[in-house]
Length: 381
Image 1 (cartoon, rainbow, N blue to C red):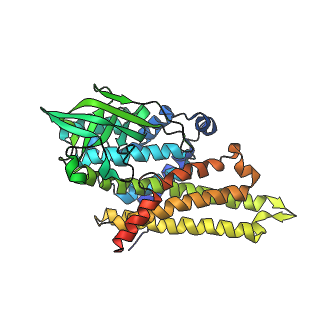
Image 2: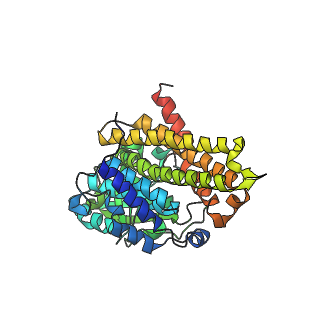
Image 3: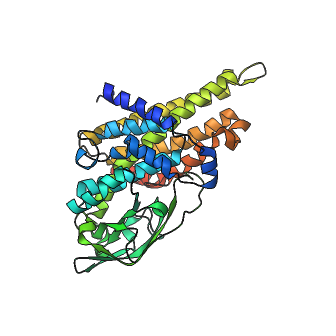
């Protein structure tokens, strides 16, 4: 199993790192005020970030495998300190664009893929509801046949990019009696009758990516906007989430590498009692743990990407990755704050923000508790 990168992949990662550094504009102010910057989003689109999930026919490039896309997002996460922006980019690409590309009708591909990749429109993935988060089988949003389309009714919450989305990939059930086999995916446009996208909700971290609700009240969706056949929604959503986890977590891996570099540099220059604090074992051991988490996370991440590239199942490996890397990001975020001490606790140094942003990782795209359940079940427990 060879995880070494090609020259092209290494160059792409470096290019995305350099580009990511150029995106660090007014981060403190935007985080404080919870501002999503559409200009930065469009710059990412112009650079080609949002094209990573498309083929050449729809504004992307043919032959781009998941490992190449992943290392690109790793580089972006290391260079760009706005974790909310990298999170949002990944969310649209892998849970909206990819399902449309792989399972959408030709009409849907033509209507949405190029504009999404070009930054002309924004897409969100609407799965979570008040009574169904981890328990997706219990979702209440229903889709009822009506002529040449469907009527959707229900409410989605905690939906990434919903307040600014032009289109949402909504998961609804066409037959609640058959559980997951009734879950179906639909594309709902913002200007459709009977749909309401809420304002942005305040939250602890990832404050530069808007999150909100989507309410559907008999909203009509034409059959051409159904993604995949009836009952395929659960399967295609799970498939997309494996890709999303790879690339969102790749951006987090890049952020962890950035954290480690900052902690090492600070521990070398900050002196107490006549010597750099890195010479004290309590500090150096903490930084060693950050390095260990970074490298073990990298191995898990690259393995999942390698499996997906080779069309191999990766349910166990993806669960291990999601659990380990998301919790490692939290632990390393806390270690970075401790290394910087009082300075790390201050917003102006931008150290504490990584910790706040990391907390969400143990919740979204499958909580840590759910990942442990998946791992245990796959072990036969």
